[in-house]
Image (cartoon, rainbow, N blue to C red; front, top):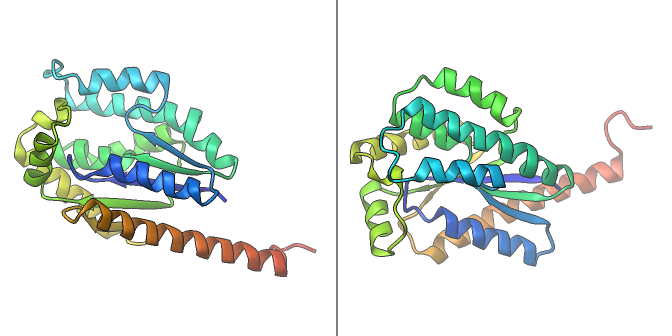
Length: 224
């Protein structure tokens, strides 16, 4: 079965770790699970990522920033994500278009309507089935990155107020679509966060598998 899962959250929330752990868990259960990321995930996307995160590109305009993210996203959807889903696999993606709505929309103040319109083109209308928001206070997240000596990037250098606005953007998005989103307190231990994510994903997969079993027994709607 195909399932598109994305992870969102402020810097230092532990998304990358949780994406990797979930992908390993799903693979161990026999699912064809693919872990990818934004920006990046393809050869072209990785080149765009280098430009976007380069500490030296301090004069980059927010519109340029959004369009570069969208370009990487367009390539990732068409080259990697959609093909894997069409083969019945599970995709676990470290950030997706919600990051642009939070960072370039709520953080930089770009018009959300315009961002959504361009995003529709970039993603070919592909929306995640399930999104985890790993929520953490931006100050704590940025401090966690420093303590763990994680490589800093251009976005880390934005003013703290920007990161607070982006976080609020994520929370607004999650509360506006509770069926797709699950908010997880990223201030907990890595193991606690992992357990909650795994439990939720397995429950979703179980429901999907039960639904398929019922349709196979009774026949698809309209079948003879």
